[in-house]
Length: 575
Image (cartoon, rainbow, N blue to C red; front, side, top):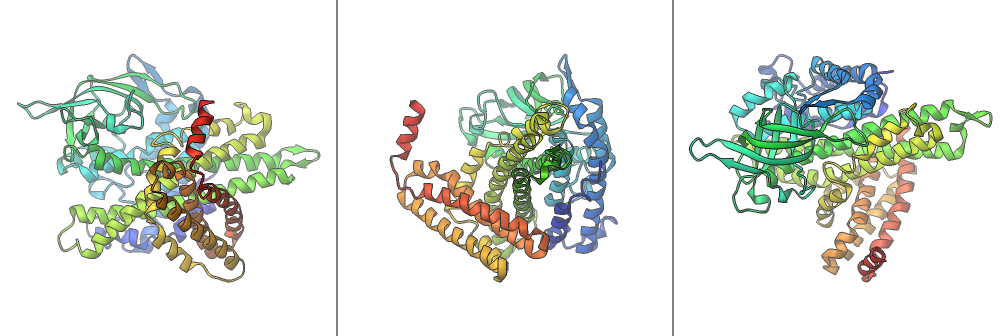
């Protein structure tokens, strides 16, 4: 095995070149944290050095210890009996080693025992954990529960819950989905009732498909307002594991076998209101879901990394017709496509996390800062990065998860018949990847989340700034011109769709528009990165040449001007 950080040039490149100066300065409160905590960084270079060292530790834990255990965890999984979930001994060992490494509170403030690291660094850890064992990420990644309590709970709740998350003594679950609601969270029916005498809240109802539903601490979306049927009647609650919260069963799943996915029954479970009433879905869950999108994007990238490496290794060792199969054009073309999709997903993921970090910092100042800190400039940046992050998070999840599925598919294809067998990890990667473009919002829902930003041209300033950074000489001039042509066609296509004033047509073509927006943005990110490392030029060129063809196909579909196409779709379905 190996160190999953030090053996990955892309992660090393990302930490060095993502330009996190503004992110870190805000996170460290202009480096005044060092006055309270002697292990806080004194400056940007000190912070990056600290991140690098911790990432190397996690790289060692994931590569040398967690990865070798993953196949047995997948085969045997957790045990469920008499309402009690017991995780596999190797899963428990994995969690203990991550706890011993001090990374169970990566993004929590230091005063609660956390590391106070940016989301970007946490996401790199998430990617490595996912490469080693995708199911373990579903436990490690639930640190978002603590972050949500930190941001929206009161000080008493922070003091009560956050130290446990940071120490690894507590784990969390996000209880949203119900048997009949699925992705339609506005229709959640689990009932929250307040005792008029004591003021205490109690929860009654069912939840389904709850990852780690056996956790000690739960964030629960529940209907607190009698007589309501939409999202405005929902609030967020914190409850703890107790006899009244019953795990009815755990699901038997296609993949991610190492984590328990539970069906829960609430029988008058005591709970605390988190934040304000009626804002459970409209603010708190939406914030939680944005974090979840990033986490699943990283999970998908981690699985894709493992799949690509497994395919490349097998192709270099498997001989047919007296030569290794990686010498065959059909195979090395597949490997090049896999690597390009992986690099593109990673580029968009970490551009997204950087924007998420900036959004979180500026929003925190606007929500909790002093009047002196809440300047007009901070207010504008809060709005700008909120819009940018809202556009990028669904685009990143759509790209990363769809790419991971294709890469895992190609990994099996390169293995041939052996890839279909349990003897190789290829089939596990394929099974684990499949859930990533389903949970925390399907790809179709990511398109719905992203299309508003595309139509409103939210990314235009960001895209134009990237254009300004790309040099116009040689290969870069040619590729930049191709991307400029795509961008101009995209603006024209958006205008074309907007002028129709036909909501159904816009929704029908939303995926084409969102994919094309992604092609433009990621092409520029790949070019920007290639300028910093000449070894990445081939990746950028391959991505853009492939993107141009896919873009043109989408564009022709959008501009078809065939208003009967909606009816034709229905005729096809009804045939």
